[in-house]
Image (cartoon, rainbow, N blue to C red):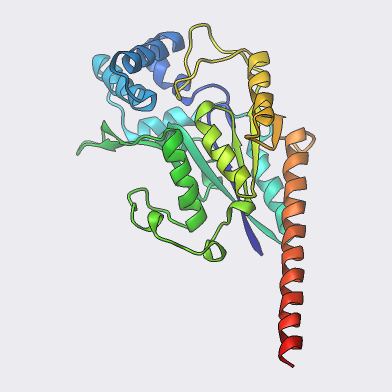
Length: 302
């Protein structure tokens, strides 16, 4: 079986909106616009990372409203996250399709959202690993400080961790060690990356340049006026999202653009299954080349 990796952003790629909006912000008694505006102002005032600023704002507002946020509470918030149509059945369908073609499909998350909330969703068990923002918890299990903040730069680092088979976030030694491309567990040309936001662009470009495939996903939903995404970008209208996604093809950053319809009748399923077909045929072609090169060596030595 050939291992292939499907790597997904989360907010706006697998799920509607931002995961913080499904329980956390409501518990604060704030509107989505009010919360993201505070994050944006904190980032602009301090010229600071929008990711760290949204994480700090979460802690600050929880403390102000006397709400203790634990890992278990975050996971409960994650249970209410609304996934795009077809997502729950997607993994089984794709896994079975790949298996019939000799492909072992592995799924990963690479997100600027919260790991703890993703772990509470209905699809958490589908992933080999979830690379996302997370908190450090005190002796009482209450979130007190950011442990991991995932921005566009660290997202590319996680791509190399997947490529080299490194599971630990803290491991900053093996990630820089040389490993021959042929010895890496998940080569880039056996990857498909799914994303929708600004933080995904470096990963999309990286995978595409290294022979893999990148898909820009957009949804038909419109954002709340004045709202801001967890990656610091303003929420766009559905038409703006579509236009922004197709511009990524024009800019040579992605291979495909698809609506966030994960059903077997959607364009996304057709694109991904066609890519899997190509990966299987490319593998057969590589084996054929290798066999003929070995034959040539034996003939020349005879």
